[in-house]
Length: 455
Image 1 (cartoon, rainbow, N blue to C red):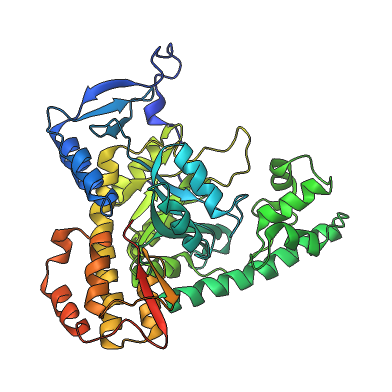
Image 2: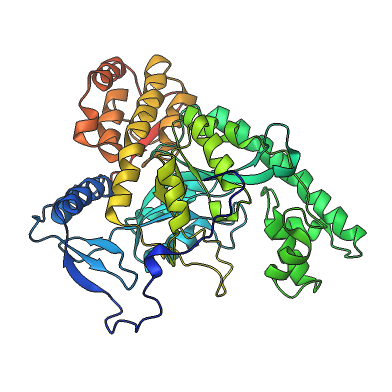
């Protein structure tokens, strides 16, 4: 596959679309293979770590009893004994970047659509994760803290091939290790987004479209770095274009008359930062790239773990082959923004087979386990408020003023680790050594105390 080749994105699982639709829209029941049964047990164990009774009822099915639903595209979706599907949504946005809804509303809609695991992946910010985690509690949805990092691919000595690249990052339940480093990295990108948005508005003004900067900021919301979608929405509201699609096709597309670059890091730097902070790095929507092959090759060298291959209308065969060629995970998500219309996929609409979910977690869980160990170890070495906050930032714990604190750091870890890790993952000498160190550390530091929520 040469650098200059054109990849034609044809859904491989959609070959029978022209045939008569099945009468049973819900799909047909079919027994799982032994590999699928084992994969389902592995996935469900992780999904229901904080609800062990649900895990045991779902994963206790014997190979002969376990089943899955085969949908109209031939994709097998795992079903537990109670008929509960394990739907993962690995790409979604909220008002904290360019989505239309709050994280709570996104979670509510995901619940309606049967989603069990959701990654909130706002552009260049993780500010919406705490609200998502809080909202997800009442629905029993598991949150994967995530972020979609804006970057640029710049081939050595060839500026014509330069293009924007988005990298998805997936973190453990308690978020990134070395959070401050990632936060500064993302903050620099957001600062660049403000400058880019201002330049876009200026270019539109020069094109005789008197769009107001204040209007764009009002749509983006307080503290949110404006993106092209916010500018497009302002253009629609002002009547300069008929819809968002027209705003992009006429003015805002890459290289368009109003397009402007920000201060995005190189794509390789984004991948390395994700790996450095204990995340799983995945190339987002590669079908939007002009030169996917050299980009994938370079990012694989930097540590890329996977790429999006699955869409709501099936798996894209050419990108699946590209992922195979470079030994990358093959995942996907709806890229939900809540803008509505026929062109947007719904939350939970991308059917990820159980073997795909298994492969994703098989790579992710050791990475997340190491990140959790590093975060807890930092607290054991230096039991400060800031290091305690790192443990409770995204996890199922909250720091409160007052109340009755747990007696020591070991109690906190004993309460929290089963929510984040399997018993097998917890059974190692490193975690035992950390717990021993924490046995003499009070979790009440500077008047801050911890309330542990297990449900």
